Image (cartoon, rainbow, N blue to C red):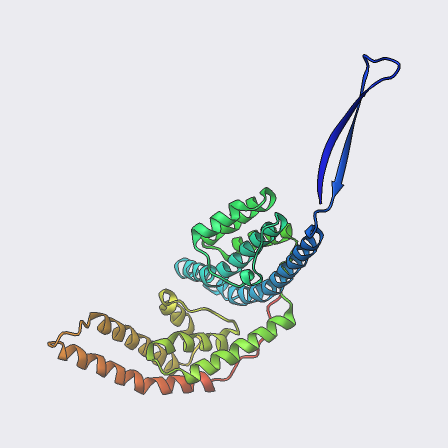
Length: 310
């Protein structure tokens, strides 16, 4: 709808020196604008509905991984690594999806055309996040910039607080985890991880997966296992495992670390026969140990899953 304002002025018949004026405002529809408004409203509704569904799933993922973090509070260095890794791998895509959707919604409000597939998940750069956050309306922009800042921090809790504030301002909800949904998510996590451990054939890629599975069976908690925290997580596990299991896990870890160092030192030169032999020897050792570790992880009694109180 467009509007124009016009002022009419005429002389008073009784007093020709006296001018009378009146302001009139005429509004009319430009053909097609009504349809475009309805179309944009439908797109906005679809964007926000999709965002809400994606938030529900992603925030639950973040929650079940964050539940394990308090176990490392007495180890600040490892705790910082785990928090930062979770922010980079799980929290950042949540923020990117929210910022991107709000940007699309803002464009629709200003009549800018968007493509329906523009609300697909994506990974933004730090610069892109800051740019999108600053471009939003002021009420959203301040909270969006605070959210972006938490991704550079080391606390998942700070991210969650900022996420809830921005989501509330945007008209979507960050729901508290539902116990039944959490239980279902943990069961799927356990099943998927078991299948990955069972089918993995790469010596190095196998280690973080088997560590995560053993951690779950010991603590009934999901955990991400970044390389920098691998040693600390294994140390945390050893006290909870039988002696032979802890020894096997430690030996496998040491062997993979040595193998990676040998591979990094290899240049492909013809005079590296000794180095190649050492690599082959270490791979043969891992090939012998992997089935034993698989049996340990896959046959170990599973601890009953009990959802944590919210």
